[in-house]
Amino acid sequence: SHTLTFLGLESSCDDTAAAVVRVEGDRAEILSSVVAGQTELHAAFGGVVPEIAARAHAEKLDLCVEEALAASGMTLTQLDGVAVTAGPGLIGGVISGVMCAKGIAAGAGLPLIGVNHLAGHALTPRLTDGLAFPYLMLLVSGGHCQFLLVRGPEDFSRLGGTIDDAPGEAFDKTAKLLGLPQPGGPAVEAEAKKGDPKAFRFPRPLLDRPGCDFSFSGLKTAILRARDEVVAEHGGLPRQIRSDLCAGFQAAVSDVLAEKSRRALAIYLAEEPATPAFAVAGGVAANSAIRAALETVSAEVGARFLAPPLRLCTDNAAMIAFAGIERYRLGARDDLALSARPRWPL
Ligand code: KG4
Ligand code: ZN
Image (tube, rainbow, N blue to C red; front, top):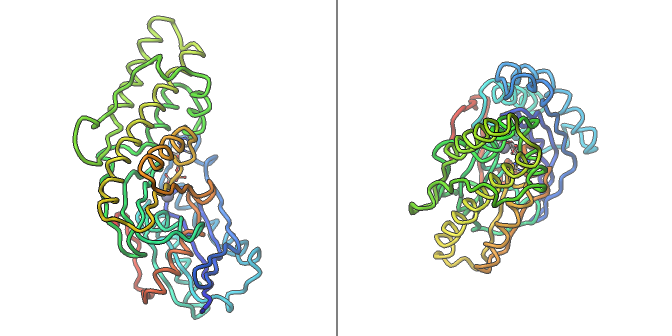
């Protein structure tokens, strides 16, 4: 069957990325994937600074594209199209990516496809494992937390999501409150391994209410209060107690994600999919305790559990190139009027 090779661009948050992906029938191959992070640029500010991010994307995109093309062994003329994240995200970065993609597409006479960043994450298990529709996806990152019932490359139903913070954000804020480095997820996970998850009992927000929505802002407040009590009592934050706080926090997040996943799985399974599958994506899916909890929930209901390799769980352009190919195969085409969208629900 027909082979399609796309260049993908991603610049919606704090990673500048370019990749070349080839799809032949059901088989997808990542020919190259380049990701240039910006962690050091934002480190001093305790979060991503949109203006700094936009400037860095504008400076790095060309280089990333050159590198991705060189590593793939392809030239522009051998490509079948260019896919780019057109939102949602920090608008300065998204505009940089869209402008760059338009330039390449116009210059090389290639089709241009705008891709929803969330669709990129949601379609990743098809890129890595050729997963068949429909499947349930939990997208958990620094900016997102939602269940998606994925029925096709452009067919997503949102079953629930966070009403305030994303879990990655909660990990990052917890790290900040406890004097741990950013990004907070890996730092909190490492501390949690040394702690007792039962030493502190943090709230499991919204578990008492029906549905698949999440709330994580109260958990952050609970950590702040517990830390202040410890500091008042001990005149500082003893190492072991800090580990216990991390373990308690991670257990709370993990419990909530697991229980809501049970509910989302029940909704999905009611549609009687032939080969039930539950996939996760996003940076928080890197957490081994959370992965294990979700794996257990999947096993309970006999669903196959999939977690893409870490480099494809976090922001990358291979998922954008692949999602672009999936849209292209459905007949989608964009042109130079493609606009960058800060908000773009699936
Ligand atoms: O998907 P991602 O790279 O970027 C977006 O937010 O789109 O996710 C980054 C988030 C950060 O908040 C980071 O703290 C979190 O994922 N994270 C983790 C772990 N590794 C990264 N959270 C918990 N445990 C981890 N091991
Ligand atoms: Zn992302």
